[in-house]
Every structure is written in structure tokens, then in C-alpha cells.
Image (cartoon, rainbow, N blue to C red; front, side, top):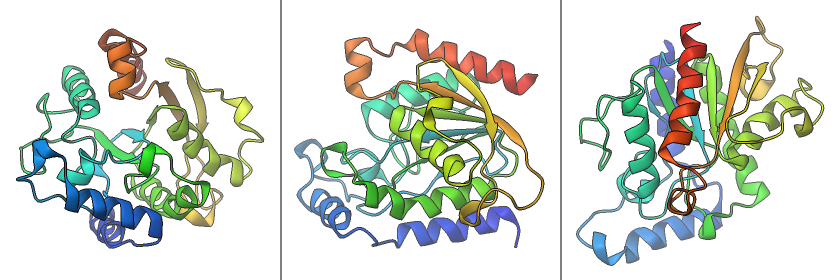
Length: 244
């Protein structure tokens, strides 16, 4: 089965997932009660699959869907302030065909870029439990296995950074997170977890570069912790690396 078809099958499994009772209750409650500004929307209310170019060289890794963003629209970083910030910058850098993302059918396409998250359901208070993160991890590992052309991973925030490194640590590729400490604008050459849940040691081992950025949350962007200029700088590093 070709990787594109395998990604579609994986996405169907993600959307149907009900592994985490607390997250199922929360995402469906949010979808029923809604936010007043979106009372006419039919909320997605299900886990969110990855989105983008299946032949991408850049994989963007976030934390989790937003309750009234992705949980409403059904597409990663779509319909909230984080997505407004992210897609505008991806468009400027040539990784998206338009700077806005409001719904699944708005015409947005990613170019040489794929977006996913460590968690597929919106967690209460944006705080997933360790078990909930562990339940989601096989989906992330399978995406990494299928996205065979990835050369750069951009982690949005420390939790996404650790989610990526945890796959390497458990496979014995790194000894501790201290080998790659999170900080905005840094990057590290690391193995790519391309063998999925079975481990990293199947087939030819390859290396990618992990780039770190603060998460484009509304709190970070409104307080100036993350500015457009700061994020553009990271994306310039990514593009320079991919061109090299």
C-alpha cells in the first residue's frame, strides 16, 4: 500500500479513536456547549488527524488541538489565534498557498510541509496527562514512519520537543533530554524515528535536524514572548537547511 493511502488509513484510525475517556468527554462536551461566537457551527468534536503534504521535507509538531479551534474545525491549527499566527508565517516562508486558515474547505494547501501534534484531542486546561500522551504516541510514530522524505522537524513548544525526543530516548538513540535542551531558535542533528512503534533500528538509519520554537499560543504572541520576527528567523533557518 503506498504511503499516501497508508496516511489516509491512519487518519481514519485517529478520527475514530476513543482511548482516553477524559478527553472524549471533554472534546464532546465542548462540541455540544460551544462558544457563543461559534454557536452556528457544527463542531468537529473528534480527534484531529495530521494535515499537509505527504511528501513533505518539513514536519511541524504542535501540542494538541485547541478546544474552539481544531476541535471545532477538524484541522490542525485552524480557526484560532495560534493558527492565524502560524499559517501567516508559513505562507511568508513558502510553505502554504495562503496566509489564513478558517475551515477544512477554505482552500489551504501546505507545500513541502506537514503539520501534526503530540496529542489529537483538546485536553482540559491544555494539560494532558502522561497516560493520554502515551496513548497518542503510536499515531505520531506511525506518521513519522510514513513521512519518508522529512529532513527537518519544527517543534512548537517544549512539550512537542519532549514528545519527539521521547521516541528517540526510548529507542536508545539518546540517553537523556539534556542532550537536546529546549530553547527558542536552537537546532540539533538527531536520528529520525522512521520505524514507528517497533523502534528505530529497522532499515537504514537517517538523520534530520530538529528546530525549536516557542509555541504560537495567544499568550505567547500577545505578550511578545514570540514575535513574528522571531518565528520568521526560525523558518529562515529551516529553509536554509532544506536548500542545503
